[in-house]
Length: 167
Image (cartoon, rainbow, N blue to C red; front, side, top):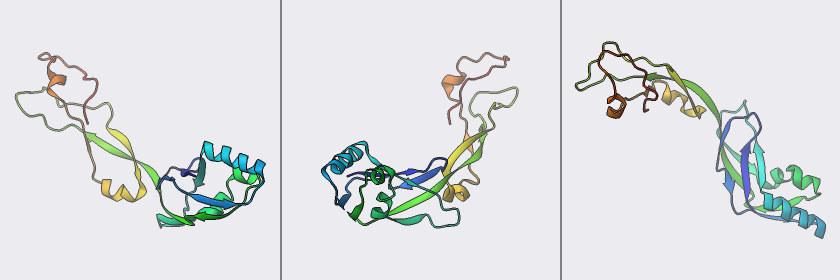
């Protein structure tokens, strides 16, 4: 069976791996329960992963049998998993955080002379990154570039708004 790991509602988490394609489960059940298991398996088994705010560790082992035995569709069908192969799965779980990043316009080069420097309607953009990467983006700037095609239709001494810059 395939087991997927998903972020619990309201928990912006990045989880790796997101899926294990080959999990073998042993359980004892009636024929009716087995048919229920097949339907559950066909729709996919998604195990929720929650953030542990008290932990600084991003790597954590998941005991698959225990997690499957708390999976509501299986428990409501009366199916109890006895054993799985693999028994555990190491997950990397990290919070996704949003950080503002400034947008800058580089100095224009070439034959183009502007009466005033270019301005931006959006001085910052929000970037979602794993929390561990926040220190590495501290000095990040997003550069809005103007391409020659963006400037081709400009008229001399006329102020004009250019719809979208390239980043």
